[in-house]
Amino acid sequence: MATLAKFLAALAILGVAVIALLAAFQTSLLFPRALVGPAPELPASTERLDLRRDGGDVLHGVRIRGRAPVRPVLLGFGGNAWNAEAMALFLHQIAPEHDVVTFHYRGYAPSTGRPSAQALMADAVAVHDLIAPDAPGVIAVGFSIGSGVAAHLAAERDIARVVLVTPFDSLMAVAQQLYPFAPVRLLFRHEMNAVDALSRSSADIRLILAARDEVIPPARAEALAQALPQAQVTRLETGHNAIYTHPDFVPALRAALAR
Picture 1 (cartoon, rainbow, N blue to C red):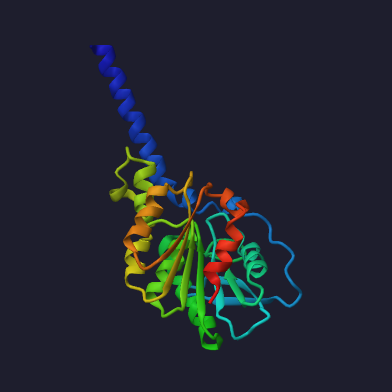
Picture 2 (picture 1 turned 60 degrees about the horizontal axis):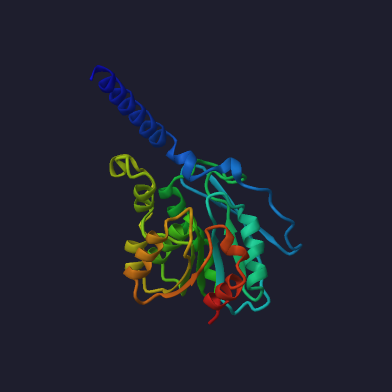
Protein backbone atom coordinates (compact mmCIF):
# COMPACT_ATOMS: atom_id res chain seq x y z
CA MET A 1 0.00 0.00 0.00
CA ALA A 2 2.84 2.37 0.78
CA THR A 3 4.33 1.79 -2.67
CA LEU A 4 0.96 2.42 -4.32
CA ALA A 5 0.49 5.60 -2.31
CA LYS A 6 3.91 6.87 -3.38
CA PHE A 7 3.15 6.04 -7.01
CA LEU A 8 -0.17 7.90 -6.89
CA ALA A 9 1.46 10.86 -5.18
CA ALA A 10 4.18 10.98 -7.85
CA LEU A 11 1.54 10.74 -10.56
CA ALA A 12 -0.40 13.61 -9.00
CA ILE A 13 2.73 15.75 -8.78
CA LEU A 14 3.52 14.99 -12.43
CA GLY A 15 0.00 15.95 -13.44
CA VAL A 16 0.19 19.24 -11.58
CA ALA A 17 3.56 19.95 -13.19
CA VAL A 18 2.19 19.30 -16.69
CA ILE A 19 -0.81 21.55 -16.05
CA ALA A 20 1.47 24.28 -14.69
CA LEU A 21 3.67 24.08 -17.79
CA LEU A 22 0.66 24.27 -20.12
CA ALA A 23 -0.63 27.30 -18.24
CA ALA A 24 2.74 29.03 -18.21
CA PHE A 25 3.45 28.43 -21.91
CA GLN A 26 -0.05 28.76 -23.34
CA THR A 27 0.83 32.01 -25.12
CA SER A 28 3.81 30.40 -26.83
CA LEU A 29 1.74 27.34 -27.74
CA LEU A 30 -1.08 29.40 -29.22
CA PHE A 31 1.16 31.94 -30.95
CA PRO A 32 4.33 30.09 -32.12
CA ARG A 33 6.00 33.06 -33.72
CA ALA A 34 9.25 31.17 -34.29
CA LEU A 35 7.49 28.80 -36.69
CA VAL A 36 6.37 31.49 -39.12
CA GLY A 37 7.89 31.05 -42.55
CA PRO A 38 9.55 33.68 -44.73
CA ALA A 39 7.58 36.14 -46.81
CA PRO A 40 7.20 35.33 -50.51
CA GLU A 41 7.91 37.69 -53.37
CA LEU A 42 4.87 39.92 -53.79
CA PRO A 43 3.65 41.79 -56.88
CA ALA A 44 5.61 44.96 -57.59
CA SER A 45 2.48 47.05 -57.04
CA THR A 46 2.05 45.83 -53.45
CA GLU A 47 1.58 48.66 -50.96
CA ARG A 48 3.18 48.58 -47.50
CA LEU A 49 0.92 49.64 -44.64
CA ASP A 50 1.71 50.67 -41.05
CA LEU A 51 -0.63 51.11 -38.12
CA ARG A 52 0.48 52.48 -34.75
CA ARG A 53 -1.44 51.13 -31.77
CA ASP A 54 -1.99 52.50 -28.30
CA GLY A 55 1.12 51.85 -26.25
CA GLY A 56 3.48 52.37 -29.16
CA ASP A 57 3.30 48.97 -30.88
CA VAL A 58 3.35 49.16 -34.68
CA LEU A 59 1.56 46.72 -36.98
CA HIS A 60 2.90 46.14 -40.47
CA GLY A 61 0.78 44.96 -43.36
CA VAL A 62 0.39 44.84 -47.12
CA ARG A 63 -2.26 45.65 -49.69
CA ILE A 64 -2.34 43.92 -53.06
CA ARG A 65 -4.62 45.71 -55.50
CA GLY A 66 -7.21 43.72 -57.42
CA ARG A 67 -8.48 44.02 -60.96
CA ALA A 68 -11.97 45.22 -59.94
CA PRO A 69 -11.81 48.07 -57.40
CA VAL A 70 -15.61 47.97 -56.98
CA ARG A 71 -15.35 44.57 -55.25
CA PRO A 72 -15.12 44.38 -51.44
CA VAL A 73 -11.67 44.31 -49.89
CA LEU A 74 -10.61 40.89 -48.57
CA LEU A 75 -9.25 41.42 -45.06
CA GLY A 76 -7.35 38.27 -44.15
CA PHE A 77 -6.52 36.75 -40.75
CA GLY A 78 -4.23 33.75 -40.88
CA GLY A 79 -3.38 30.78 -38.74
CA ASN A 80 -1.09 31.10 -35.76
CA ALA A 81 2.05 30.19 -37.72
CA TRP A 82 1.18 31.90 -41.01
CA ASN A 83 3.15 34.66 -42.63
CA ALA A 84 0.68 37.45 -43.34
CA GLU A 85 2.30 38.27 -46.66
CA ALA A 86 2.06 34.65 -47.79
CA MET A 87 -1.63 34.77 -46.92
CA ALA A 88 -2.05 37.98 -48.90
CA LEU A 89 -0.50 36.37 -51.98
CA PHE A 90 -2.64 33.25 -51.51
CA LEU A 91 -5.87 35.28 -51.34
CA HIS A 92 -4.77 37.40 -54.29
CA GLN A 93 -4.28 34.25 -56.36
CA ILE A 94 -7.66 32.87 -55.25
CA ALA A 95 -9.58 36.10 -55.94
CA PRO A 96 -7.46 38.43 -58.11
CA GLU A 97 -10.37 40.80 -58.73
CA HIS A 98 -10.43 41.86 -55.06
CA ASP A 99 -8.03 44.10 -53.16
CA VAL A 100 -6.40 42.05 -50.42
CA VAL A 101 -5.19 43.45 -47.09
CA THR A 102 -3.33 41.49 -44.43
CA PHE A 103 -1.35 42.53 -41.38
CA HIS A 104 1.24 40.63 -39.39
CA TYR A 105 -0.26 39.86 -36.00
CA ARG A 106 1.00 41.86 -33.06
CA GLY A 107 4.33 40.39 -31.97
CA TYR A 108 4.84 38.64 -35.32
CA ALA A 109 7.80 40.27 -37.05
CA PRO A 110 7.96 42.90 -38.37
CA SER A 111 4.96 43.93 -36.20
CA THR A 112 6.01 44.73 -32.65
CA GLY A 113 4.52 43.91 -29.26
CA ARG A 114 3.27 40.69 -27.70
CA PRO A 115 0.46 38.56 -29.11
CA SER A 116 -2.69 37.71 -27.19
CA ALA A 117 -6.26 36.95 -28.14
CA GLN A 118 -7.42 40.33 -26.89
CA ALA A 119 -4.65 42.16 -28.75
CA LEU A 120 -5.33 40.38 -32.05
CA MET A 121 -9.06 41.00 -31.85
CA ALA A 122 -8.61 44.68 -30.98
CA ASP A 123 -6.06 45.08 -33.77
CA ALA A 124 -8.49 43.56 -36.28
CA VAL A 125 -11.01 46.32 -35.56
CA ALA A 126 -8.29 48.97 -35.89
CA VAL A 127 -7.12 47.55 -39.22
CA HIS A 128 -10.69 47.51 -40.48
CA ASP A 129 -11.13 51.15 -39.47
CA LEU A 130 -7.94 52.02 -41.34
CA ILE A 131 -9.09 50.58 -44.68
CA ALA A 132 -12.89 50.85 -44.51
CA PRO A 133 -13.29 54.56 -45.39
CA ASP A 134 -11.99 53.96 -48.93
CA ALA A 135 -13.36 50.44 -49.40
CA PRO A 136 -16.56 49.52 -51.28
CA GLY A 137 -17.09 46.89 -48.61
CA VAL A 138 -15.11 44.42 -46.50
CA ILE A 139 -15.10 40.64 -46.44
CA ALA A 140 -13.25 39.18 -43.45
CA VAL A 141 -11.50 35.90 -44.21
CA GLY A 142 -10.21 33.91 -41.23
CA PHE A 143 -8.17 30.73 -41.22
CA SER A 144 -7.83 28.50 -38.12
CA ILE A 145 -7.14 30.79 -35.13
CA GLY A 146 -7.74 33.70 -37.47
CA SER A 147 -11.36 32.59 -37.71
CA GLY A 148 -11.83 33.76 -34.13
CA VAL A 149 -10.30 37.13 -35.02
CA ALA A 150 -12.50 37.51 -38.09
CA ALA A 151 -15.61 36.53 -36.11
CA HIS A 152 -14.86 39.20 -33.52
CA LEU A 153 -14.52 41.81 -36.26
CA ALA A 154 -17.88 40.76 -37.71
CA ALA A 155 -19.48 41.44 -34.32
CA GLU A 156 -17.83 44.84 -33.89
CA ARG A 157 -18.21 46.29 -37.37
CA ASP A 158 -20.76 46.18 -40.17
CA ILE A 159 -19.03 44.04 -42.79
CA ALA A 160 -20.48 42.39 -45.88
CA ARG A 161 -19.41 38.81 -45.22
CA VAL A 162 -17.22 36.63 -43.05
CA VAL A 163 -15.60 33.49 -44.48
CA LEU A 164 -14.08 31.08 -41.95
CA VAL A 165 -11.85 28.12 -42.80
CA THR A 166 -11.28 25.36 -40.20
CA PRO A 167 -13.06 27.45 -37.53
CA PHE A 168 -14.11 26.72 -33.95
CA ASP A 169 -16.95 27.71 -31.67
CA SER A 170 -14.75 28.77 -28.75
CA LEU A 171 -11.00 28.64 -28.31
CA MET A 172 -11.51 27.72 -24.67
CA ALA A 173 -13.72 24.82 -25.72
CA VAL A 174 -10.96 23.65 -28.06
CA ALA A 175 -8.47 23.73 -25.18
CA GLN A 176 -10.90 21.89 -22.91
CA GLN A 177 -11.35 19.11 -25.45
CA LEU A 178 -7.63 18.79 -26.13
CA TYR A 179 -6.66 18.88 -22.42
CA PRO A 180 -9.60 17.33 -20.52
CA PHE A 181 -7.41 16.74 -17.45
CA ALA A 182 -6.64 20.44 -16.97
CA PRO A 183 -8.78 23.12 -15.26
CA VAL A 184 -8.93 25.11 -18.49
CA ARG A 185 -11.65 27.52 -17.33
CA LEU A 186 -9.43 28.65 -14.46
CA LEU A 187 -6.19 28.98 -16.40
CA PHE A 188 -7.03 29.92 -20.00
CA ARG A 189 -6.22 33.53 -20.92
CA HIS A 190 -6.88 33.71 -24.67
CA GLU A 191 -10.55 33.11 -25.25
CA MET A 192 -12.07 33.79 -28.66
CA ASN A 193 -15.78 32.95 -28.73
CA ALA A 194 -16.86 32.79 -32.35
CA VAL A 195 -20.41 31.64 -31.53
CA ASP A 196 -21.05 34.64 -29.34
CA ALA A 197 -19.48 37.04 -31.83
CA LEU A 198 -21.28 35.76 -34.92
CA SER A 199 -24.58 35.57 -33.07
CA ARG A 200 -24.29 39.36 -32.74
CA SER A 201 -23.33 39.93 -36.38
CA SER A 202 -25.49 40.72 -39.39
CA ALA A 203 -22.78 39.62 -41.84
CA ASP A 204 -23.30 36.87 -44.36
CA ILE A 205 -21.49 33.82 -42.92
CA ARG A 206 -19.68 31.11 -44.91
CA LEU A 207 -17.91 28.20 -43.20
CA ILE A 208 -15.48 25.69 -44.72
CA LEU A 209 -14.88 22.76 -42.35
CA ALA A 210 -12.32 19.94 -42.35
CA ALA A 211 -14.24 16.80 -41.34
CA ARG A 212 -11.03 15.04 -40.23
CA ASP A 213 -9.39 18.05 -38.58
CA GLU A 214 -6.62 16.85 -36.27
CA VAL A 215 -5.78 20.30 -34.84
CA ILE A 216 -9.21 21.76 -34.08
CA PRO A 217 -11.51 18.90 -33.03
CA PRO A 218 -14.29 18.55 -35.65
CA ALA A 219 -16.85 18.72 -32.84
CA ARG A 220 -15.86 22.33 -32.22
CA ALA A 221 -16.42 23.33 -35.86
CA GLU A 222 -19.72 21.45 -35.94
CA ALA A 223 -20.82 23.22 -32.76
CA LEU A 224 -20.21 26.54 -34.53
CA ALA A 225 -22.17 25.44 -37.59
CA GLN A 226 -25.08 24.19 -35.50
CA ALA A 227 -25.21 27.44 -33.53
CA LEU A 228 -25.45 29.45 -36.78
CA PRO A 229 -28.25 27.97 -38.89
CA GLN A 230 -28.06 30.97 -41.21
CA ALA A 231 -24.49 30.11 -42.24
CA GLN A 232 -23.63 28.41 -45.53
CA VAL A 233 -21.46 25.41 -44.67
CA THR A 234 -19.07 23.36 -46.82
CA ARG A 235 -17.55 20.19 -45.35
CA LEU A 236 -14.49 18.59 -46.89
CA GLU A 237 -13.23 15.11 -45.99
CA THR A 238 -9.71 16.15 -45.10
CA GLY A 239 -7.44 17.38 -42.30
CA HIS A 240 -6.57 20.77 -40.87
CA ASN A 241 -3.52 21.50 -43.02
CA ALA A 242 -4.33 19.08 -45.83
CA ILE A 243 -7.47 21.08 -46.61
CA TYR A 244 -5.44 23.51 -48.71
CA THR A 245 -4.44 20.75 -51.15
CA HIS A 246 -7.90 19.16 -51.29
CA PRO A 247 -9.18 19.41 -54.89
CA ASP A 248 -12.46 20.97 -53.76
CA PHE A 249 -10.96 23.60 -51.46
CA VAL A 250 -10.10 26.35 -53.94
CA PRO A 251 -13.51 26.12 -55.68
CA ALA A 252 -15.19 26.16 -52.26
CA LEU A 253 -13.27 29.24 -51.15
CA ARG A 254 -13.93 31.05 -54.43
CA ALA A 255 -17.62 30.25 -54.12
CA ALA A 256 -17.63 31.54 -50.53
CA LEU A 257 -16.09 34.82 -51.69
CA ALA A 258 -18.33 35.24 -54.74
CA ARG A 259 -21.20 37.70 -54.79
